Length: 193
Image 1 (cartoon, rainbow, N blue to C red):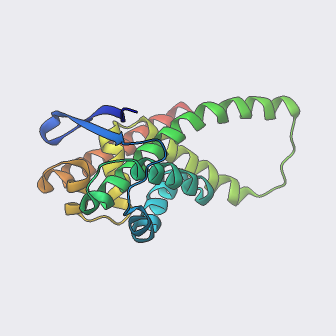
Image 2: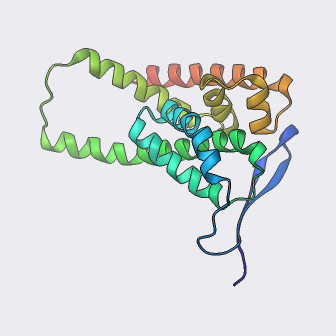
């Protein structure tokens, strides 16, 4: 049986596209170092996804998906932490974007049912603020959103640079631009409310 290959492109240093492949040598074949990498990097992957999604349960689902992909990849083990963090951010952002559409449908359905919610004003305000930030984050250019999530997940500038194939000197600029774009998006959404 021929190996399956999943290919795509990712933006590399200087905006150049680079080819990224995840290959599978045989159905069910899993790389031998998966358990070690999983034990070492699981908490970081869940942490990155949880910062984007705000839900540990969803973050663990994202981690499962990311480690499944990694288990069938040819990513060198030394590059695993960066690869996994970026994959977690990408997967969580994609889930967030698809969740926005679902949540819009659910809100319409809830309004139709006239659901009465107990007075928990502080929790509602906090949840609304978090939802606004997540919605604004989903509107950012993908590279900026990922850089912002990774940096605020505790990765150093060097780790973010390695994970996103950026020069270390451009990480700060990318993060500052992302923060500025996030503020603008939040302001824009606040003024439209």
